[in-house]
Image (cartoon, rainbow, N blue to C red; front, side, top):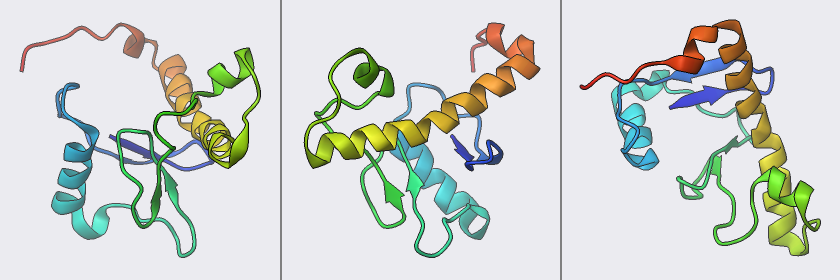
Length: 119
């Protein structure tokens, strides 16, 4: 699990969970284990989270069951209605996180070809 800011900096990273674990389990573990060290959004701000997380105070997830990914909008019709417009904006903003990982992988090319090891 990673937390990034809009300046494309990783502000929190929790590694060590297998990829098959649900996002909320990792999130709850991070909040309970790291307590005060776990980053919280500034007052009147929110963290954008993906659809693996529910909407809750300080965290905004997209509407489920509607078009979400930025690429889907670019290849199709523009958003219609408040919920699709919200998902479009949410996806556009979350694109920063994808760019953070792209920059990291370009700097450290070995990350493109990480081998899998049994736990």
